Amino acid sequence: MSEIDLEQRRWIGRGIRFGLVALTILLVMSWMRGKVSRGARSTFGTTHVVMNPPAPSAPMGPGDMRIVSTNGAVELVLQGDHVLAGMSAEKVAEVRAKLEDSRAKDTSGLGGMIAASVKRGVSDLIGAHASWPVSDIKDISYENGRLVLQTKSSGRAQLFDKDKGNAEELFAPQDAQRFVEAVRARMRQ
View 1 (cartoon, rainbow, N blue to C red):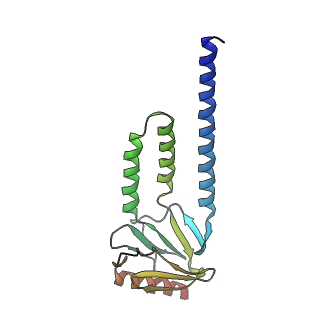
View 2 (view 1 turned 135 degrees about the horizontal axis):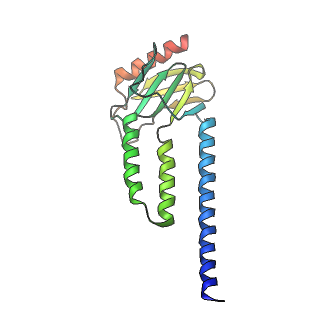
């Protein structure tokens, strides 16, 4: 076997390896997007995932409202006939900026390509919000500094579970109470 044959075999092997890794990444990303776009059933009942939640600057309709946690990390939105919960727009922008900074550093070889692809996929999905139809909500309450949702389809769901060692309230009590009253008013409509 000559030196050229060996080198050609190495390049063919590298090409096949690269192709298989790329195919695997595409299949995983396609599967993830399919799961997110169809919605997800979970212990929260009929929960759907909203990829493009309303922007903070978007005008809200009559009776709609948005509250942001005291630390600015998460938000709850009552919009139309849905309650949405997820990371706040400010936190999403912060996380995306950090991912972009770290992605710029991952440029070498196959590992860098894989890391960049995964970070791009995460960046695309990071702003997603869980969404519950108001028609599926049996009750909503504010208990021990947290909002608790009772759904008809699956029971109790505590929104943004409190850390065991954190006694701090996630939402300002007056904001949380206004949100509860707004959701209850929407349920009566």
